[in-house]
Image 1: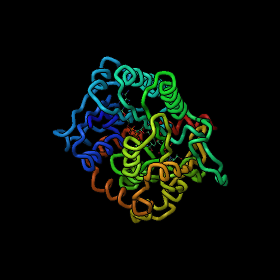
Image 2 (image 1 turned 120 degrees about the vertical axis):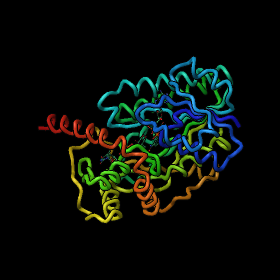
Image 3 (image 1 turned 90 degrees about the horizontal axis):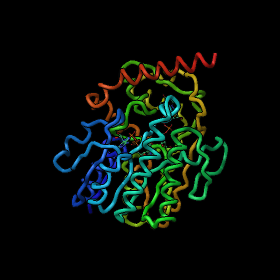
Length: 338
Ligand code: NAD
Ligand code: DAU
């Protein structure tokens, strides 16, 4: 199978490439990635002789078209993915998440190529902490941030191209991923690398917001399951029953690294901060037979902490810049709040 992986140098896309080389060694992989700040070129260096890497933009039809024409399936991971950045400047989110997905759709339509579109549970908005409900494929879209609204828009474009033009596509909406190669701007890697560099972890608001954590390999195995067994035109939710509040995650990281559990700071909350996400993945499990392998979040987190501890060469070059940018954002939020 010839697989075009867009965004294949980012966190989940690169893990998808590495996992595919392991479990589907006959697949021929091309990565199309713009190599924004979120990509780390060194992630794919060890497999450079087994993967064709193209530097380019999913919103550039001239680049996209010949790559799509030469593929059996396109897996779209490419996106602007960080909520905090979307609050500071939404423009690249509109361009990549909406115009980029549109450009891919027009190309798969022209060439009759299968698309799998990778999306997020954030399209459903948030839940109260005590709400017994979880998100299902039937939950109404209700996104909160520029990031999640552009992802929601991209999903709707995919659905429209399926219905109006007969494009063969599936969509998955997954919960929060953790694991190796995640950018240090994101919550778990940020707090691990904070502790490793002598900075106190930072919790937004009251720290009680809940995320539904899933290991990145479980997400990517689910994506392969949907590519191979999913019904064209359908949406599948991916989740591993991993609900944990942010404070508990930070306390676990501190404890694992031998620091007092209370050695963190509360900081000004993210504007519009979603309270809780929770996925009901019954459909994926019963109809397609997928189930997660990493069912114990504590041991998955411990392995992730070990990975960051032993791969400072991968993250250290960008750590200071990320923290300087967060400090600037916090100053603005503090000024606006006072
Ligand atoms: P990431 O930010 O780590 O990686 C995104 C990649 O896309 C980067 O390599 C970047 O260079 C590339 N990219 C950005 N704009 C591009 C463009 N215009 N053209 C080509 N490449 C471009 O993101 P991630 O966390 O790996 O997320 C991957 C996908 O999974 C996204 O679509 C995201 O919405 C979705 N998702 C993420 C999570 C999560 O917890 N991280 C959960 C559910 C869904
Ligand atoms: O739910 C899936 C989504 O998960 C994906 O679609 C996004 O691409 C991905 O970034 C993630 O979004 P979140 O906003 O949930 O992830 P983030 O890592 O930014 O934050 C996780 C939680 O931790 C959230 O409640 C905000 C909080 N947080 C984050 C940072 C960076 C803190 O308390 N302190 C921090 O320093």
